[in-house]
Length: 511
Image 1 (cartoon, one colour):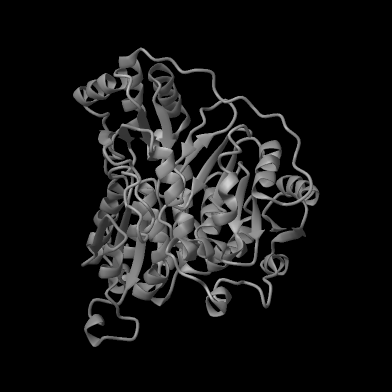
Image 2 (spheres, rainbow, N blue to C red):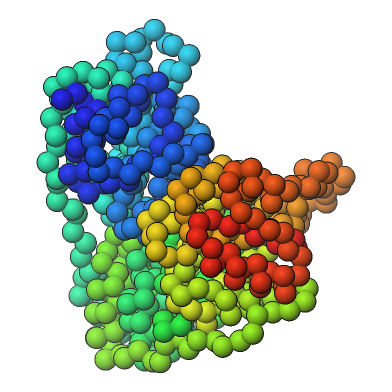
């Protein structure tokens, strides 16, 4: 058995059965092993940013890691942007990255790079394999490491001779790290704070945003008068009819500060201290009001459902009635963010997975779809645009029986448009709504936030016209059905048709 064969056997033994890949020469023995050893689903991405983003989306929905297969340092570098997003989402991913053979590296061949240095920037665990007989045990450690905390990226760097040399040994399955609830003293402390009647915001993140912990949080809020908020960007929220709605802290600094201004106390439940995405002239970095007190009930690596259940029990709290289904008609007429939210609420398929990279146009989509059919809502979490299409791909691979709805801004969609080809190849059940305003609208707002006055050159750098992007032709060229619509009536008809279609479908919504 060579090292590559021991790698595949070890991944399978440790529960990793999906590999998103864009391989090269140094990974050919891994590719050959994937061909010879049954059990691993291999999904080809035409760009490494698609591979890494899809692994993120898969992990969020499958609740276990996929492997990636990337080519040397430059291939890893092509995937770094979405690995940054993956790290911020605390998603479990096992990166398998090829590298120069150990004896060849000193010759400084053209593809030689600081592969380990690239990996450390986005990984919680990194290791370069030294010998073929170490591949299996190192791979088992990589899978175990991916489960650390709430989840993390682990990167295993494999010089090509460690894959082709004989002597590989299959690594045994290693135990998963255990998570515990916050300590009883801390739960009692927060319970006393909530009983004081002061203005308190509970900010929830990561595992606290599933249906069960949200029910506990709603009970706590009903019993104490506290308000519930989710972080601005979240890996996954279970929401819709029969569940408990939660608003997100707004992205714009002024709106976020206004939302949090009433609170004397901010309690973090698996969330981070709310800060702005950027520093702006004359504006603070922290969104919490001056003079407020920050408390930590639990960190992201805690068992957040158990923590919130224990706090609700301490308070003797029971949940109120969950969100009812909004029975409304789809919107008609002009395309606006509010109109799209209304149609999504009316038409969203049961148990859909909504992938939100709607950027500037999406301001009304999340807050106005609480009453849609039950669904999951996932976002890119690191602010690096271009992950929406890969996230949708990975989610569709993880949950083939659920419809994925991608709400995708056109500018950021161009970063990883190759994901559409993989969706067609894999027959993913995904409806991708391209929000085609033909400009980087978000940057126009950021230009104003920093106090600049854009001229013609600046405006041209934010314009996607001249020529206009044609998403119907691009989708068709990659084997995906597509249609362009310009009114809400047309959108409603095509969206319903798309969701009833097997495989992927792109709806270009001109806005």
